[in-house]
Picture 1 (cartoon, helix red, strand yellow):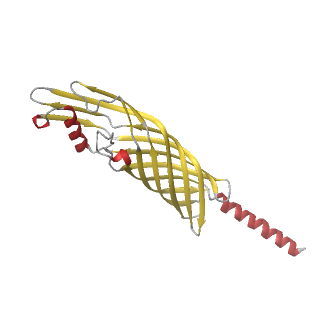
Picture 2: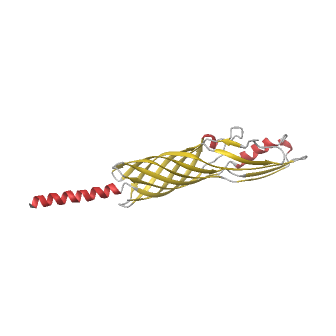
Picture 3: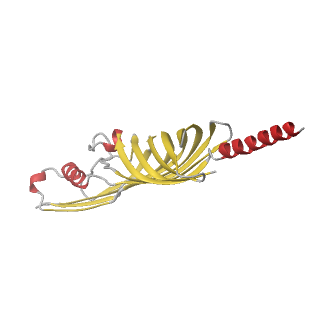
Length: 237
């Protein structure tokens, strides 16, 4: 009888410990990192609908709920900003709207940055290894992207050229990534992650020119790709 009580106690204790370990596979996290542009987003060409994007930053709120031993669902909200190559964009715009660039007397150029936010969810896989967890996710959802607004005025001996442009769009996007959570204690972890982000929005362009036009387009498609490398903290539950 005593042996049975001990056996029952061990089973119950083991179940409690297993449930605790199981529950702590889920997490909520906040991370910061670098956004490295690729594809057309990184091209520096008006003719190729390039984004002139330079490396920027990303802030991510993320989490995952594990409803099986390894599998669950992940969600993420990210905000990113990438500056544009101001000098190259200014030169290309000036060349595009003036007939004889060497005659330019004065150029005034104001320009913003790429900004975009994404809300996505999808399947999640986690593999516990000693004091850490190896995570994989594939999420998809909505991306809202604002292109850098610009205002360019070019003064030549015989004419003043002006062009102003802005654009924004909402589109489908997806992100594939992996991460490692290094467990500090039973509740917290340091999270390192890397993700590939992709969307292909269509921009409706508001472009007004007093004389000439930089692109002559009312809309254009762009393949937006970034590699995001993040470091942050996660709460395990």
